[in-house]
Amino acid sequence: MDAVQAANSGHPGTPMALAPVAYCLWQRFLRFDPADPVWPNRDRFVLSNGHASMLLYSLLYLCGVQAVNPEYETLGQPSVTLDDIKRFRQIDSKCPGHPEYHWTSGVETTTGPLGQGVAVSVGMAIAGRWMAGYFNRPGFEMINYDVFALCGDGDMMEGVSNEAASLAGHLKLSNLCWIYDNNKITIEGHTELAFSDDLATRFIAYGWNVTRVGDANDLDMLERAIGVFKNTNDRPTLIIVDSHIAYGAPNKQDTSAAHGEPLGEDEIRLAKRNYGWPEDAKFFVPQGVKEHFQQGIGKRGRELRDAWMARLNEYKSKYSVLADHLYKMQTRELPEGWDKDLSTFPADPKGLASRDSSGQVLNAIAKHVPWLIGGSAD
Image (cartoon, rainbow, N blue to C red; front, side, top):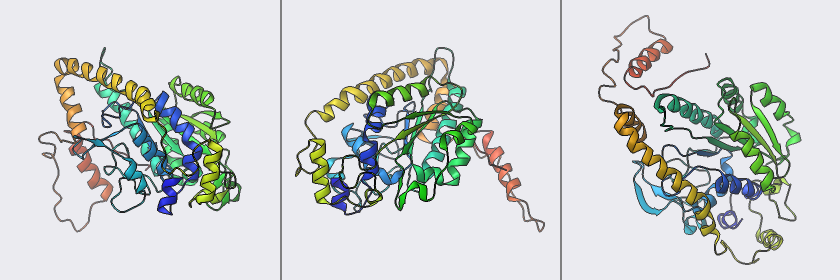
């Protein structure tokens, strides 16, 4: 609330509504080490409704996620500070209006154009499935990460989300979970103005497992729903969560006024009163909150990564070629001679269809870059 108000721009309602969902996922489930946000086997979290970016920045700050540079070197400083949050949506802030990959550590992909994040999450899940098949060996489960994407009605209205969901169902990507914020509000008003799909039926038709949480504030119900995903091994999962946009704001909860503009100082004070927080304290983080996250996601993530690193050392001694490939993927280093079989295309008055020329190029590269994956709908 305070960050959006200070910027006089942004989307406060969804972060307020989904705070319990994000808390439950990050604190109780996400296999993610804040000290190493690029650990290869981490779970991926995608905020597809990127306009709710303050939700993600709050998590990065409270969890103490560390900054890395584009070469994946740790910088010894936090990814997001409270001062960054105070400069939300300002030039050069680490907290831009929509999350940007490689600008803010802990952001797995740039989101903002609705539908983009959920589509990318399918690609991440495909990559995870491929990597597990390529790298895992008996006694060495090196890759088994899950992909979680938070999404909203805007994502579901976009055609790309339908195409991506169809592909995910076809491929039975059981490592993929979309969490749908069913707040029934768009920037123009109630969703009934333009969107009346029966999402559960639609996703069942795609081959997904679908479960529902009737109250976004019910952490036990959220935990059970995520547990259902964890125990589903033959299809992706959609969790439909009923929420209240701008939960706790007495005059703007469940209204479009809370979607894409600041709540206003008076409404923020009233919301804080409802929460039992100091009404005039801005950017207030109670003592012990960051320590609480350190004992949850911080401790769990550190232990998981340490165990994985120990396993990696053994893996290197037994499967040195595969370990080298994993290293090259992580560092974005191409194998030597990756381009030696590339074709040349002499001038031809008849021309060559781009699908043919691109196919020749991709197949030539794929001979030497096993992790090159491509495809199209046609």
